[in-house]
Image (cartoon, rainbow, N blue to C red):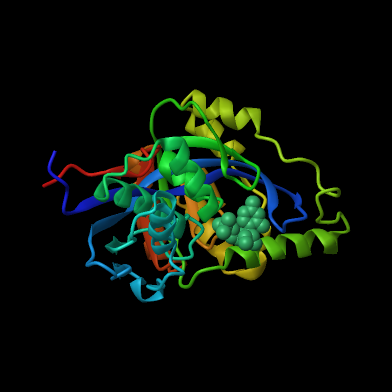
Length: 314
Ligand code: C5P
């Protein structure tokens, strides 16, 4: 086999159809029961050889590309360094991110790019790293990175990195409303703690019941039942995201009025997610959201889709 000179990986965004947040642990992370769902909205990460000693050279294009850090703090760059260090090879690579996933939007776009860079560099450098090792490296990069490797639908326990695939029947149709400006994930978790403390329930591990996956939600996914899934959607970070960004309430309302079956903030926000009956209904909800003036853009899409995968060579 001749070595590949260019590798392009497609990687999905996620929405959490359930995000049950437990108490803050001693390490500062929150225990989660988190049902990840991969959607067709995604980024493309292309890896090509760097020159000896060049290190990781990162470029990015797409809406809000100017907000994406291009230094070694980017999860894609960190992924290339981590994989190279694991195998004792030089991390000399050019990485280009074609960005469609909203930046700092609660759809794990940065995590997706980290997962895609792992897969792209693994193929470019012909390392053939086994999936369990890639998943462990991904967990070192961040709580949401392992799921972007796996895709589909999965229950995430621990801080979200301990994954169990969840059976799903058929395709669900979604709309995502992109807000102007992002929200910081740590800030939203911190606000969740603050609201719990203010309510008197407490925010520590010992104060909050252990989060559990909702059996009704899992049954709705297994049965391909969009109406039942809509009724079971839940996000414990939603109140915190709305507290930091009250304007999101109008976005959620606009989608509900346009006929969405279910509405919720995606992850830590500020992207809002709308579950629709079918592809036609999703297009109608997206059009209504665009006309409502309550978001910057609205994308109709579907899922579940596969995790990070190498595209066939052109
Ligand atoms: O793991 P990741 O780097 O994506 O997490 C970003 C931040 O989100 C953490 O530093 C923490 O503040 C918060 N977080 C959390 N509990 C989790 C996952 C993330 O508090 N389970």
